[in-house]
Image (cartoon, rainbow, N blue to C red; front, side):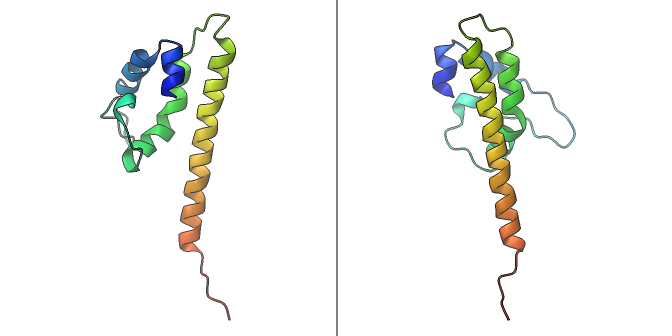
Length: 103
């Protein structure tokens, strides 16, 4: 992700949009720039899932002709990442609640 943002000269704009996510009941606002997070866990991972697609789409909203395919692929990648993370979370939760006893 960082390389993509650097390639298209967007890392500062992306970080700015990431940090400017407004408060909303029930959602936590990121307290670090996207580029400052070196290990995604807990709160950071939750924020990633909630915000990355929206922030990326917002910052990539006006690509020039040469950037269009890259930007479209990046937004699709972000959505796929979120879907994957949500799937892993569901599997983890369901495995905790499944009984393994046999008669």
